[in-house]
Length: 581
Image (cartoon, rainbow, N blue to C red; front, side, top):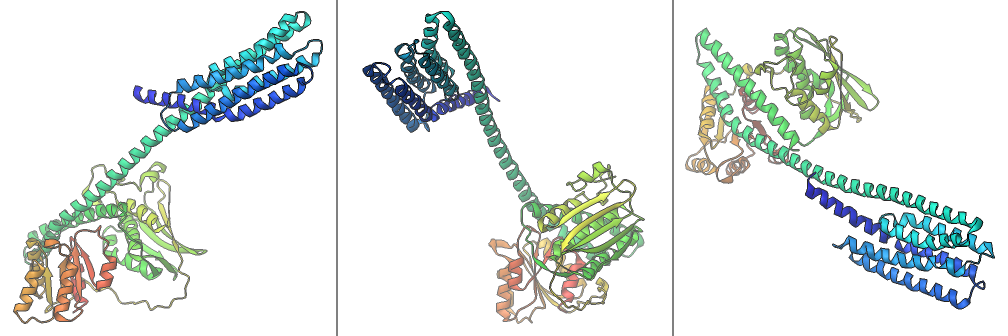
């Protein structure tokens, strides 16, 4: 901590000690007034009445002055004030009170009546003991107060001599002892106040650093989202051009090179998607849309997606799923399950994965059990961290970025479902997620129809409208759609498209493929609305975007549109077109 910071804290400590003095002022005055009344009562009729009245009146005047002083301080205590000045103001008031109280010893004690000496000794000792807590925040005030209170009494015993001399010694020892106690209390109080301010300063710095870290995290997410969007554009075009080029290759060597090129493009797309998933979760851009899900059908469909990659890795996936319904977000849960399965296939080749479910009261426990190499205890603590990978020191890009399980952890937290990992080195891993059971009675027919492959889709003859302000993307879409036998109308802007519609007699399009962000701050939704209004028909449409941070779900539902994210997989595009053919 800097010298300036120390000086500021010491000044605050000194101010707080002054406030502690005045905080207890009225209470201590009330105690002194009570003791003064007790002295007045005890000595009334035993000493001259005029003397004791003047003594008591002097005390009342001093008490009144001290009350006024305390009131004045309370008015300015929340502003800058001189701690030294107000300390000594209080000390003067305390000493004046002590002078009057202490004068009671030479004025009132009659040693021929021992009771008066005993009474006054008890009262004065109690006064000093009680004043220790109230005055210890400023030691000079306590030292002077206790000395002025007890010194006259000690002198009276000393002056009497004889056996009474020992009482003066006891009073002196009492004074020394309580001065030591007061010093200890002062040290404790000062340390406590100083630690409070140091903790407050540390808390302020922690809050400031937390805000800086949160801002940096948000800036990072926005930067990655924007960068990812810009990277998606060329990847989108590259994927489409590669698909067209693949159809035109003849020699085995050309096809082999194309397979490697497509593999590199897929790896890059997957890595980019993982980064974007992380940024969307961290930026709070993902919304949860719960719905009833038939668990067995859901898991079987996801396992089927991995049939080829599992076969290639010689990894056997089996399921034992109950016919229960769960209540959660289907899209986000699918992302969790895909990442877990993909992680097992990648890290446990030639091993087995069992996916099973068990009902636990009103929940379903979904287990992913593999017989792979397992995890050491130290690895279990970090395996869900970002960019953490086991057995990949060379950073092989084909093994991803190490974000899969990090995404799983974030998504389970978003869905408020419990995630557990148990493993032992050499004995495989078990990942469990606890899903809420859907209670309502539901009836459904589960389709046994296998998912059609891309090769079975026939979209030839469809009239497709494509709008994209990136000429490269437009050209790539043209090549792909023409290779599928589609009829096309391409445009860079809404105005360009609508002029074409007005100038010629076009048939109603079968599908509108519109980029979300267009020139002049126009959006794809506006283009879709204009085309539908022109033909007076609810034409099927899809928004294509490279920005996954957009929360378009509500708008897509309202406008009855699909969404496709760049880089666009040609299989997904063909499936979408097949749905309207």
